[in-house]
Length: 356
Image (cartoon, rainbow, N blue to C red):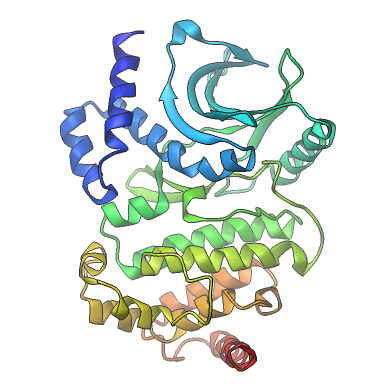
């Protein structure tokens, strides 16, 4: 194995054992100013965790280990560079297109089965629907391997998981809401085309940086699990998932799945919140105050059983998050539209709590 790939392999394995909050400093020291090496390691680390849900869907467990280029194989027009994960259900690769266009992609090869024709057709239809959408890692190719197994490719994203990026960059609550709004708008654009994601979590969103700007990119569209359809049913599951996404990004943990979860502003005071507050450049008390009011209500209503009735699409959710940015006090002093929406959210929350 070449020295470069051996070094990347070693650093990926070692970095995976470093706590996320310490990883930025560790990588800076381990990569010793080699920006290209650090980018390779960070990207593989991100896919090692962000594609874990996708690989579990195919019955897989992610590994994220690079392979020797001398051992490269071809998948369609794609030359394999790294193995990102594998199991009996499928294998995920990082690959480079052979020819004048040497763009990179994440290529998932699924084990052939009775419904592989349906899978390939669904992937092709979703790719056609999503062409041109911003904020989404788009499916760019699909087909079959020489052995007949279906594969699909999406543009390879060099970035960090959004939760790791937020914590390691010590982003404030407001900064996190801005990123979350961009994610919701990307998902909402897909909803407008009748395409749902079906497995949204913080692990499925990577943040890239260009010219000092941070841009979140949603992974996982074009996967066999993503669903299509018409009307609110398309968006309802994604809206609920975005509630969990917001809770994790703003509170630092997934919401409880049993009973009636406390409001986010209450939960941060129940936790050992000092380290979480430091990662948001604030105090536990101020952290709670920033969540109290509008953000409490918005997250709470994403998590009610009929969230799709309150938020017909993720675009509506994005609009309300934008309203909180315009109205940081969270006390209903924003636009008339936001005040009307929040009255609806409050009524939905009260009705849900009475039913429990």
